[in-house]
Image (tube, rainbow, N blue to C red; front, side, top):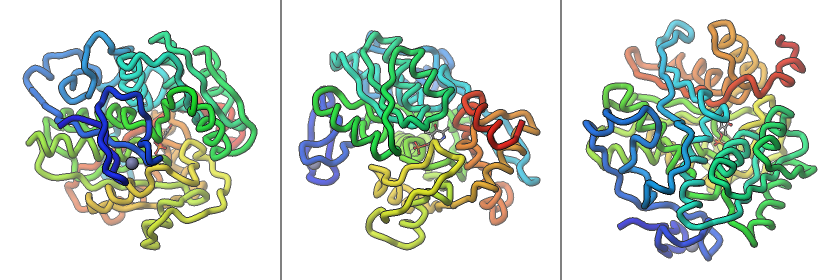
Length: 372
Ligand SMILES: *Cc1c(COP(=O)(O)O)cnc(C)c1O
Ligand SMILES: [Zn+2]
């Protein structure tokens, strides 16, 4: 049975209700039976909509797409171990967030939503703003005034942006107030966003000749990539395409690592942390809405959470540049985590690391760090 459901109060809703959270206030998830007609899929255009039967959208006419997805996956040596890098910075707006935005904004068109509200420190705002512009939906993005100037400019170019003073939590609170009137196209709350980010798992699997990797290493803030990957691999398991859930390794920046502390400390809830400054501003999330779900996904996959210091992130950022990958500091978090993980990896393990965002949006920051 396809529908929206609440894991907290167990209410169920149809996929056509205009809801971004449950009436009880909790997050909603989506129940949907994915299908993988492999021969047909392989004959389709190289974008994420090739997995059409696994994306919960009723009518093709509602698809808002710029040909996003099916990003390259290349082999690279990290500390003498061969890994697969998935080049997620090769998207229309420069980050993997386009996966979630294309599916969510398409669903908004299907629902007849005319106004979108989102809050973001950058890339999610860029993605939602771009796809709303493409789909002619009015869009209001709340961003912290300290967000990187490249991302602020990009959001403005798409015709949207509202700056808020204060940290990410203050911005989220302002957006939440605005969302009482409009539709919250939030990458952290809205379950349709995860129905887009899950296509990363499908692509990885197809690019490995329809096999699952052993391990996926991703940066984690709100967990949209990690949870998306988890949902995608679960779809592939249910569809009989793979027979084992890959190990999911989330990496956090030490100055803002509530999930690391929750996981390692065996805590029931997200600890109240004082958020320190990190160069990985894209994942500096003190209170991830889906924190509990992230921890559960990691446990179920027999995965782990690794925390890395800014000095390690910066070193990884430089190392990646030297082999030809210009990524943003937040993306280098996964590489820094991989360097820790690889010390204990099993020989022959298939490891995939998405490179989540382009360095072209972090030029000011790199100059500030003296990396030019
Ligand atoms: C959004 C983002 C991530 C992952 O963040 P989540 O908050 O966990 O979804 C990683 N890297 C970049 C560049 C991002 O923009
Ligand atoms: Zn509920």
